[in-house]
Image (cartoon, rainbow, N blue to C red; front, side, top):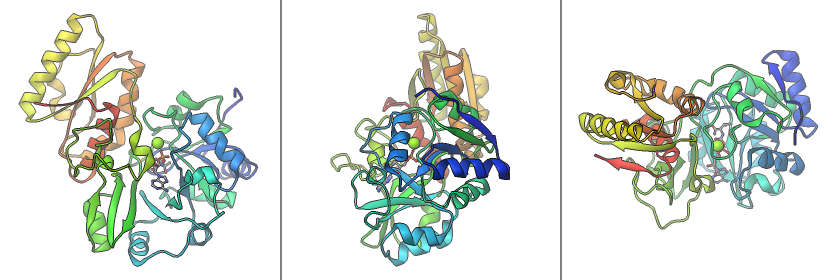
Length: 360
Ligand code: TXA
Ligand code: MG
């Protein structure tokens, strides 16, 4: 699978070429407002299979289908209710993925991993929308990283993971949100958040005027994440969003998420990092602007200000990749309040920590 990966600028001729590549069964990474996606024609089983292969993604984890307009939606799904319609009205285009009943035969079977639903999203990124419209097909696109790695927020991250394995990447600069879309399904007149993301629970409740509940797994409590704040426990239930059961977003070093009172957190991390360093380990701390000065480690990486969690969300994945670039073996990450976008941030931190969460 070693071939040249083209890097296209985000201009019209390049988008036209990328669209042609998609139409002809190629696989192309492109920017969205959340993270970069790795796209394939959702109706083409061979193209979709290549996406799974390039990522090393388990085949029971279905893909999100990206659309550019409502016409494409009607071809893809069966009639749906009032609540999904309100959500589309309020949040599309935007970082919200809605799980809907799939129209039989509308997508290659691997896209839905055999479920009778399909996850659909209309991204709020001009390059993504132009590419999908020019391709003229629904575009199945998981995040454009190797499975288990942090999602890419720059074209350079895509190349880091997938150069030689995909046909090309459209370089649209830095992804604005930085974390993946919120994934929801509607059942019994309630919205169930399967994965927290760019659209907050608070915003969903306000727009839809109904209850919003969090899947245990969505708040970080997958089988491998037993102790994540911010969501109701649901440990016995099978995860409804199959992807949530896998380890995700992880840097290569072993990461621990530390939660609790600010001073206690800093003292605990300080002690642990000093001990690890004394034992010859390269240490890293992922922290917020306000606390950066407290730490002494081989890499102190600031992902943003506590006062602006959306900024921390935007930078999180690049920060995780920075630890890799600096050869860090052990990482401690500070938690943040699980409110608004902070809930999605904590979800990704818990996942990146592979369930190593310490309360102090
Ligand atoms: O922001 C995003 O959502 C990015 C960009 C590229 O759009 N995409 C993304 O895709 O994060 P991916 O494949 O990394 O995550 C898709 C998530 C997985 O957790 C998967 O299990 C869930 O959506 N999913 C897909 N289809 C589903 C379905 N029919 N029912 C429940 N969950 C589904
Ligand atoms: Mg992903």
